[in-house]
Length: 375
Ligand code: HEM
Image 1 (cartoon, helix red, strand yellow):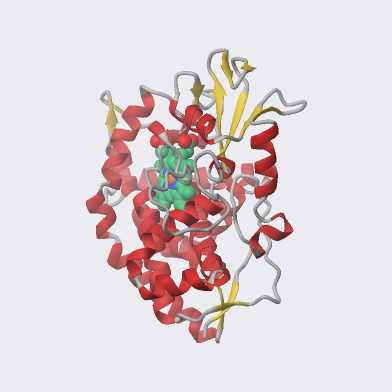
Image 2 (tube, helix red, strand yellow; image 1 turned 90 degrees about the vertical axis):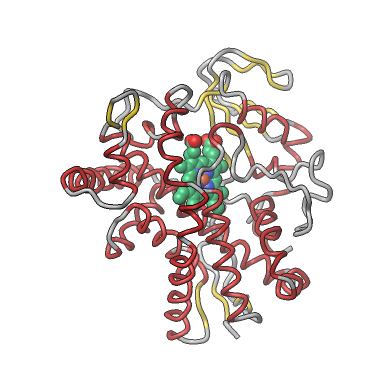
């Protein structure tokens, strides 16, 4: 498959690691890589041994966010923010998502017969949806994009610079909502109380930044990977075009096959043994969902893109108490974007003169660009 060339998806390497070194000590780092499905799932679900807890001394807002908390704090935060992600609220966003998608495609079409799926559709769509949920003005979309790129990239300086900028930006908005409440998520966060105490500014900012990171690049990558898959596999495209009820299954297969989030990490809370390896308290464990999702012990013919897998128990959205809070939103956004694209341009074709290339990120599977001819 063309996407397996150029090391785009290192499936062969994952296979080798699963066979030869499924729990691998990282040289000079004191951490571990974990590649097999059962082990990745065990680390995800056993939060008493494998902790998500961020550093309490750090002023990095993500360290104080829900993603980096263990119970009981995690349970409290999750209960609080789950009010913003109820099926009813997500469903109510559908018309808005459809409207944004249509207008992005209209804009792209005006520019000519060619568009870049990443820059013109898959990236602006989730950013606009999150901006909408957070109640942040549309003019800031470009800044959002630059920030979320820097947050998932491998450049440490850019990461800290953008953390600072975002902290200032969201503190100002939080302050504004305290004085002038509105019907948006940031107002809900500033008004919320846990054990009668308000969230700290750092916690609120951490959540906003997390949404930006967790919800943007990930959904962008899911949509772009799906567009690539349909282009590379004409029989899959024909099936989905003939029967749109197959689209949700196709999206689940994109989660599995491409794993927009390639890995997560935990720290060892108490000494433990995993597949015969002795893991010591304080060590980091990198859990490779991208490898687990191709584990031959769980998925038949794992390297075949099969939209009919049922069940498809991929770990692309995590597992256990931190399971993705935006899963239904991501599914709905990608379903609307892909359906609209396929309805309007059923014969779109990737511009093969442009080589496929990944962004400089270990954590995400992200295409730099995906130019397509519309008709
Ligand atoms: C393709 C799309 C997405 C993927 C692949 C994805 C993946 C993930 C994964 C793997 C986790 C678990 C992290 C862990 O266990 O440490 C997670 C958590 C989370 N995701 Fe997503 N996500 C996506 C979209 C979204 C969206 C659209 C939102 C919100 C707008 C969102 C919000 C969150 C939040 C708040 C958490 C933290 C939950 C917790 O710690 O309890 N995600 N996501």
